[in-house]
Length: 112
Image 1 (cartoon, helix red, strand yellow):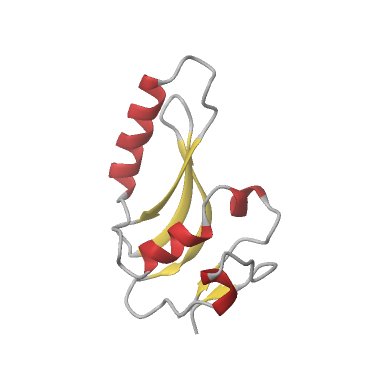
Image 2 (cartoon, rainbow, N blue to C red; image 1 turned 45 degrees about the vertical axis):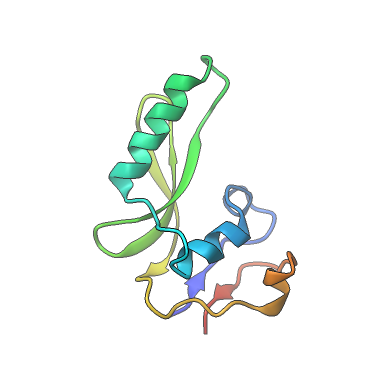
C-alpha cells in the first residue's frame, strides 16, 4: 500500500522534510513511537524559551501500525495532523525527482 502525502503547499507538507520521510520509510532511520515523540517534544519545550516554540511536529509509528504526522503543543496535548498509511514493509518506491530534491507535486503517493 502506498503512502499518501499531504498536498504540496499545505502546512502539513511543510512540517516535514521529504528526504527525511523517505529515509525513515526505507528503514534507514527508525520512526519514533508516539510515546517517544511526546517525550522528545517535552524536552524540546523544556530547552526553549517560553513562546519560542509553538508546536513540535513529528512523524510517528503508532501502536496500530499507522504512520502519522502529529503535532504536540507546549502543554503536552497532541493532534494527528495526517495519516500516511499503515505499515513499513515494502511501501517505499520513490519517484526519481524526489531523490534529486524535486517535488512530485500536489498530494501524491509514495509507493506503488
